[in-house]
Length: 408
Ligand SMILES: Cc1cc2nc3c(=O)[nH]c(=O)nc-3n(C[C@H](O)[C@H](O)[C@H](O)COP(=O)(O)OP(=O)(O)OC[C@H]3O[C@@H](n4cnc5c(N)ncnc54)[C@H](O)[C@@H]3O)c2cc1C
Image (tube, rainbow, N blue to C red; front, side, top):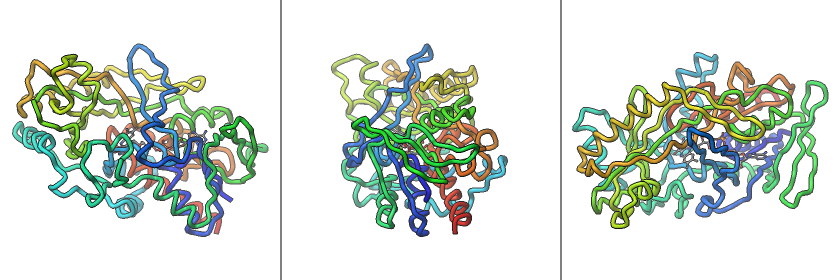
């Protein structure tokens, strides 16, 4: 039996592929099984250790992990970078793009704000593309709530794969946290779990795959004495915006276009924090046009005593400043009043790098413990600075092939 810890991006695809290959699978998930539309209630900030650099981390704890609140961006990345670490995911990237239906949305799903972003960026010489998405146009009601758990369930989430895994016989145990991996010598023997009601239990398994996300997988590995969580990236971002009366961007499909720069990416994106920072009651959500600036950060973070500690390098600050300057130029070209432009504080939503390939796991994602693997964003060695779901899915799909080969 294979025991998978976590039902997010890394865990769900592995569970599905193994169950489809008739391998017995048990999946343990810390959070509850909620409808995607209610998933915004499970945003989790308890690990956030407020330190001077004022950076906060968004993730959700529920069946489906952070995929339930994802913006539906399906960018193909890390293909060349991972080859440099001895890991080729080209085939799996193709397979994953097909599995979750990555495509650019129909023109009917582009609102005025996104069109202005595209036109204005082009007018100042930037190459903008339509964002590759895993959203189904026929179900999407264009409400701007992608990152709040889609109210019309119009995007792929890991819950889709968990359902298929369960249909193929996988056992799903939710509202139960894996607190420890049990070992005998250097071999895995199972896990200890703590249920919502406080009771504890153990489950035996000679293969355990940690897919609890970069923060929680690192915490579990540290309890085994492994040196996980000594590095951490978050792909930090700010959202920069200002007033363009009645543009109504906040209710468009979020992040529906993309500019990939050398040191940052830009995508149209709204945050209520902008209204708070403009601090003028006459300005409503519908009056803001805004852009996310996201960077690949240095891995200057760590998981220490169960908490996220993150600092930013001088290079990180430079990249954010370059991106924000470019975003400002686009906003002004789009007609935003330059006197109104504000920024959010720095945030992060792509934690990774805590159990990197060739450091904590090998190229088959195996740790030094026999039977213990890691298959989530933890294993990505360097910050992508762009949406990582497709790459995490590809890495996990590759692991599923390795395990199927090993166990058949
Ligand atoms: C608002 C938001 C929007 C995003 N939009 C995009 C996007 O459009 N495209 C994109 O590519 N990326 C996006 N991301 C990032 C993406 O969602 C994450 O990078 C991805 O989910 C990470 O996958 P993972 O498998 O590492 O962890 P997760 O998907 O977070 O899964 C980890 C799972 O493990 C569970 N867990 C944790 N600890 C335990 C434990 N001890 N025992 C049992 N279970 C446990 C968690 O509850 C969770 O279900 C977004 C993230 C956020 C927060």
